[in-house]
Length: 294
Ligand code: PDD
Image 1 (cartoon, rainbow, N blue to C red):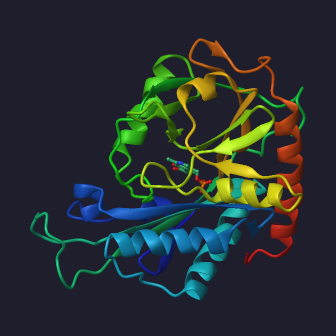
Image 2 (cartoon, rainbow, N blue to C red):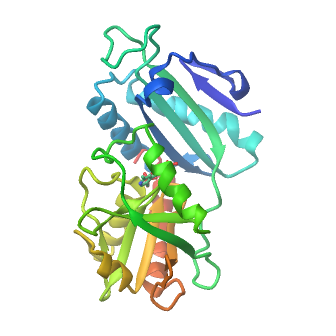
């Protein structure tokens, strides 16, 4: 049985219940995180906890725990769920909502206690790291119709969920999104990288996209080898003219895209720059696994 963490107690997931008057349920008023772990060790935990803290600050929710306490909750959820899930790849989901109030109202209530929830789940195995073995993704391309606070990892995910479904309805596995200027923001649950004229690009961070931790780890792992990623606007034309396109996230790591809507990316096969990036990312990841508090 899956072990969950609810308001300071470890309980079977089936027994973890909250009030329907929780503001997370009523308003999507909360923050979440997904922290990957391999073989019992987390990847990028500091960065994930920093992003969570920044999101809580934006929502004016006081972080209920110290960093040490969060690390202990995450480690406990991994160790309690690893055997049960029979997987070396465990994701820890954390969610903090503003809390429960007995009268529904938009204003942030004073003296409210945040609801804290976490559980462990089985992540897919990391993508194969050779061109002939990795499964490339077929994705849709749509207008980004979400709000102007996409940098906050908020539980208000309906915009993302609807974009994901838009792709799925077209038989695609993800949806890449374009803003009003026809520039790439991100995908419904991943960041986007593009290889164009042998240079690697990713959209610069702003309110239009989540500052993905995997995105940052990819940039760091390439920088260690002297390879720059240019963080700038990526036009639709550049996306469709790219040699390679990749999606990054804690569960997908770096996964190549082979088609966008009806358009074939590059040769229609994952490319050599991806091959190099995943090799360097894996090398960097193993360093992080040895020093999980990065
Ligand atoms: N998704 N952009 C969006 C909109 C996301 O939801 C995610 C992550 C990312 C990549 O972020 P990271 O590299 O930190 O995982 C980018 C998570 C995994 C999810 O919602 O399940």
